[in-house]
Image (cartoon, rainbow, N blue to C red; front, side, top):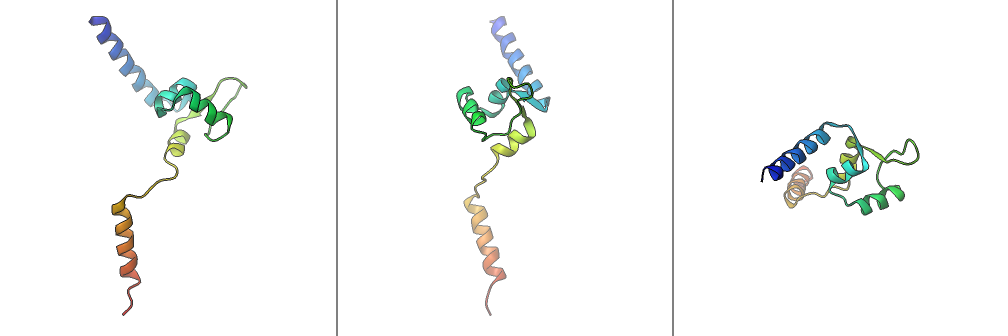
Length: 95
């Protein structure tokens, strides 16, 4: 039981450390984004996700660029759409 508790605490500490880094390794990027290893390889090989390959072998990811990539193609909520429609109709109201 003590070993399990220690492993859980170690796992939490590792995740906290990754949260402080600006540049992530391939495995850290998988953990950070929740993307599987095979899908992340596919994204990098097709050039669909920003990454660096400084020595021609290892892959590195800037955390800031990963977040931007993850948040692209935002979708508005129904509430946002309704608010914009109301604001538009009030601005363009004909007298």
